[in-house]
Length: 141
Image (tube, rainbow, N blue to C red; front, side, top):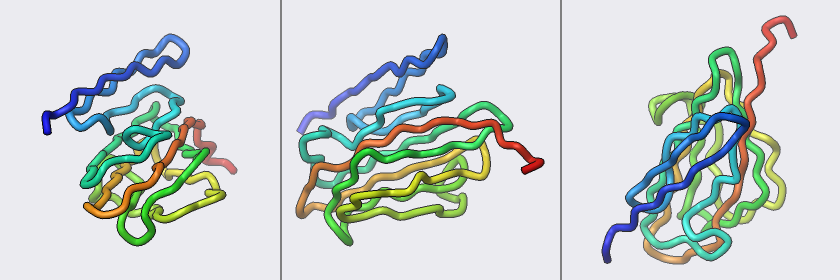
């Protein structure tokens, strides 16, 4: 199977962010707010053996809020893991799998968040769709 090259431009205000990936998913997201971000081929089914990584970085002094519109993966085998930092060495905030009808917003403690989606070689599902926003963190609250 030939490698796919995927490029998307997310426009937010006057900031343009380009996401490029050889697998058709993942990338670096740097707009203050962005989305929608989806699993490969969404709303169709994602493929087997997917490995997608997103690094979200918003302005210093801000936090990140992820909001999910949809989440359907193979339960126990296909995961979206969300880390509270710039890479997978950071603390794990959440590991999502299966059919999630309502996911409460997921919030970082800093201006970076790292997400990894992995699927195995068996069943495939529709995947997920989320957006993110940044909010200036108020230390006095």
